[in-house]
Image (cartoon, rainbow, N blue to C red):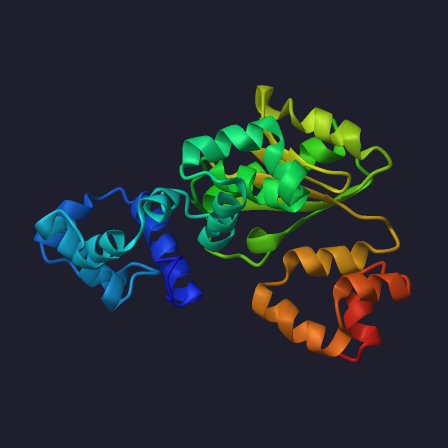
Length: 275
């Protein structure tokens, strides 16, 4: 549905419902056949409940099959990686003259994607192609504590602030992200590669690194200085909707950070009379 004109919030709702279903102790098949009220579970409304019942009773979902039938073979293959932006991937396909995910991976590994289309595109593709799963927020609490302790202890960062969906307490998350302050970011990246024995590095540059955690979600760390700490935490914590509204008042956070010292989140909101 990402490739069509579906509301992105609706798409996210389906993804979160799917993640929640994977954590059920009860059999979804039995719940449906016992005519249980699926909407009693958080995140499952009438439309999603109807889809679940259709899948259980028929083994398929008519709308999904229709969308697959309308999609090109290339787009259908991309749909297996929901964190990829189909429009961006198809642009890469056209630019490099490729037509399969396997060939895309090969061009990515060879460095051709980065050379032709830049680092950001290469990072988006590598992260999107890395297998990951969403987990419920409460299952991430212990993991967050362990990572924070490792950052402050083994990695010796001056401070670390959890951000993103976890900090906003979104009930299903696909990654844990931190803003950190350190004088040696490359050393932190090296150390994180040994977290839990071995944590594969997915992508990195001079200010950000992404790892694939054994828990099935991603870990993202973003470097910030003391001077721009507040702006970095706001940028990495706020939802897209919040940041869009904030930008109407402040302009881009990147531009704002260049204008002065924003050592805390509060300093931004207080100075702009947004408290």
